[in-house]
Image 1 (cartoon, rainbow, N blue to C red):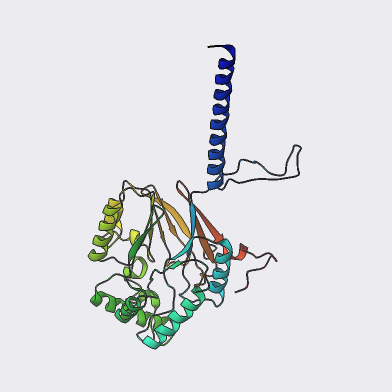
Image 2 (cartoon, rainbow, N blue to C red):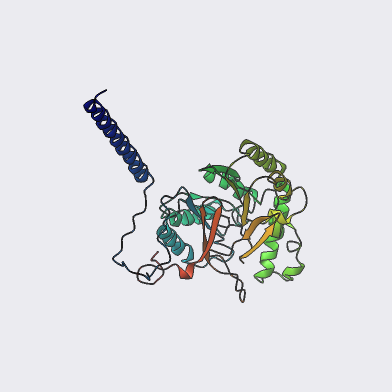
Length: 337
């Protein structure tokens, strides 16, 4: 091979190498574009700089959802509507609830329709999907249970979003006979509280009922969620939402049987009902009781506050509780309803 031939081969090889590098660069550029790489531009060139880092996350493979807590048990007008406006500004992917969405406690279908229409009208202003879950105010008696079925479908259900499993539980899941016993005892207790009849609330039948605080779960509901957990054994995370803290109940109608099935998976439990915020570790997992999003509050209780909860689902959930009084618009005021 002569000198010219060698040069030609070198030239062709060089061109091929350049071409391969260009193709690789284009692929990298395309990948960066697909990942929506963050571009940071500033006119501050010297040190120090008024920020801590320029190591921005190139892409976000996560999503954020929000949770609202109790509206009722003494709803304060305008609070939930404000929360809807704030949630639209926060822009989560979707919003979940933990029950007590209406005042309820009645067998009057017209009154129930009026209350649900009011809630749905305000909720319709959300810019993202909203997931219903019932509490004791929403599912007080068999007629309300039937109303829920006709309007919203199942009282307990699940869904999967981006490899994250959500178990939406019914903590008012009693046999009809027991439900009526609780309902009538509750009605009498309310009359005592309102001064309509004589008595002491703390000495009432309802006050001593375990279901008043911790609810109950039927065998059918357990079987349903057992099947769900068996179907999705390896999801990224599992969220368990309910109104009353079934995990405080220690018999077969409590959460213990399902907790046993979740021993080998990461999960988080969230409920409402007490109108006072608390958090604890149980079985190595996070268990949170939310405060309120418009419901009645306990005077003198610093943990009885209005808030919305944001959950960013990264490798594991990053949970942030935002007091509504601190979510302000561009003018520094609460967003208009």
